[in-house]
Image (cartoon, rainbow, N blue to C red; front, top):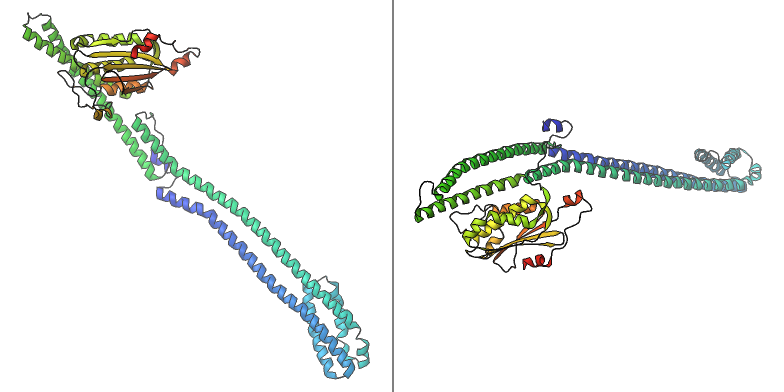
Length: 499
């Protein structure tokens, strides 16, 4: 289903998406390059045509000035020597002048000097048919003729300057337009880059969240659909399959543990009941040797029952991370734990020193009791016979400190790093008939973390082994009653109980 939903409007593969992103991002840049080329070609063509026209017009204006001078020279020479060949030269120059003047008129159609020159050149063109005296009488017209020709030349230069200024303005306009297009198209390319980056990164982040949820065991009931290329969609489908498989395996494990606990507890209860009846002399009085064997069987049964309960507690904690906070008296919890292990302590011959002052605290009572229970059980199992066991409690700011210390063999440095790992057993061996499961301290650590607390092995303590539990005051309890304050400071005797 995921694949069908997400492939309707997205590329079929990650490679296609990357190639599409490259093409689409490069498209505005290609348009920009094309428009820049068109603008530069337009300016280049305009500048080329204008340059050629300017050269032709300047050359034509200069030729008109030279022709005017040559026509005047030919007319004056004819007026002096009266040689007919000079008037033929004059006529040729006049004809060429008229032709060039007509071309110049197309450049300056409204110029009055050109209009006057056209009238004058028509009059001067008639001089070759006149007498020498009439030619001499017409020589005065050449002064105004030359002045108007120079004026036309100046007007041509001004026209060329105006055209150059227009080309410069057009170049500035094209440059400004190119800058605006560059800013717009580069912004579009950047936006497209961000869009395709998001399209590629989003499914990867979705997969990352799925993997983290799988690893933490807190996956929501309905997983989010992976939307993206086909490769990532298929990977999301594989994660769905993996999630279902893990759930199936977890359900099988839970079922196995329930069945095994029942199957183990039923015969174990019968064994313990039988040993109890034997110890009570129901089947007849036992000899001291027989009683010792029966007590050993009963103690081993109790140890086995403890191991089964620890295993079930460990499995329960792995799937129940929430804390149920309440107010309780710390000294009462300690008394309950010691009462549970009273017989084991008496058998071990351990001297117990426990915190007994009233101390209210807000935390998860059941988890706190389980932590202390595991720590006391651990101290009984590994502590020395006839040794010391101390349970201390004191408040430090907004935290409660609980310490369980015992005399005996210190924990080896090589074991400290993995002390709270599940099923890890160090070099030290339990003093009893059965080996431990290696999950007691792991269960205690998980209970502490569930309450945002910390369980560590204290480095400096008068006794050989000391576990220190730090529990913060429950924030949920404060939220229920904003005016509620922390318990009053402990008495001096309670503060010094840890020393």
